[in-house]
Image (cartoon, rainbow, N blue to C red; front, side, top):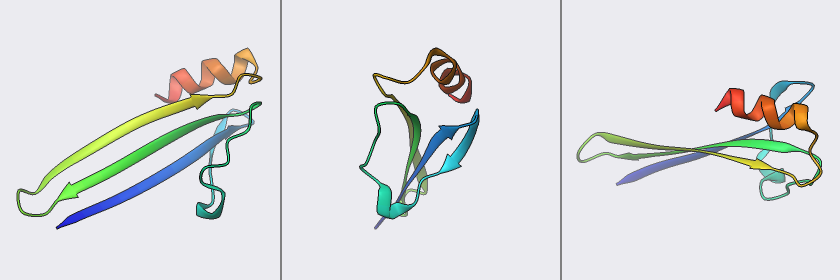
Length: 71
């Protein structure tokens, strides 16, 4: 049995702000996002984590640098 979870944060005012699940998949070109995908395999008890980030083409350089710091 697999247990999964996806959490997404947007960087606003140099802070990580959670994105509501109803807004998942809606990325804006002036923003930057951090994603955490968590998967657990119950039989072995092992965990798998993926951390991704998405930088909008219009995101300013300060947001780009902050995203790198969060990762």
